[in-house]
Length: 249
Image (cartoon, rainbow, N blue to C red; front, side, top):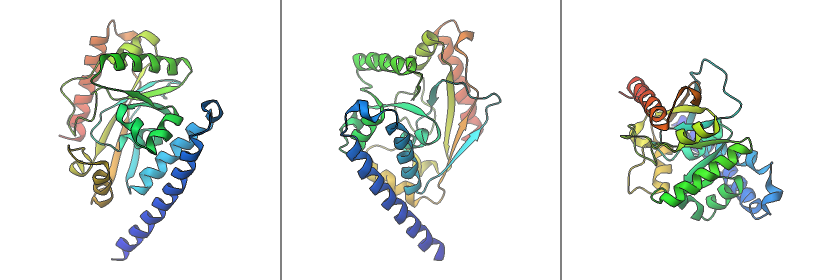
């Protein structure tokens, strides 16, 4: 009973902090874009961290990489849940590629746009091509970019294939891919099930009996060892199947 009361009080305070900081970032998002750089992006990452705290998630980074992370990378990850949208920026300084619908969320949309989040309409080839150009533009600025090669939130098991986009861009730019494998110990609570709403998902995160989220980062993959995007894609996809067998099966 005491533990429950302490948890309720803690989460209540975290939601208060998040609400105040959200209001601040939302107000600042109306400033001209040129005024927001470079200080708004670090505030956005702090906002993501506060969101993770408010949801009561125990987010853990596991450094499985044997070599230091490269100075610049294209981060990829599997996409079983909605938590990644705030979990990945909490742990990594990345500009994420998100679904177009996020842009229309009246508060989160403005904050993400001001922070430099990239958007794509996944069912549109034209939009995917435009997103690829935006990603390359961000990489030319020296930024790191994060995306999900499954092409969306596909559930707790790795989807039947990866899309080529991340690997094509990596080959063209020479920037390595940094693979991160996501494992939620209470898989059913964290997995995105249609037609759940985001608020329902938030409640599942907060009410779960196992709030541990494990993000495993592995060595970056040098694109120069591949001749084409198909081989590159297949190699990385097989790695994710091995990690799935290790952590989920």
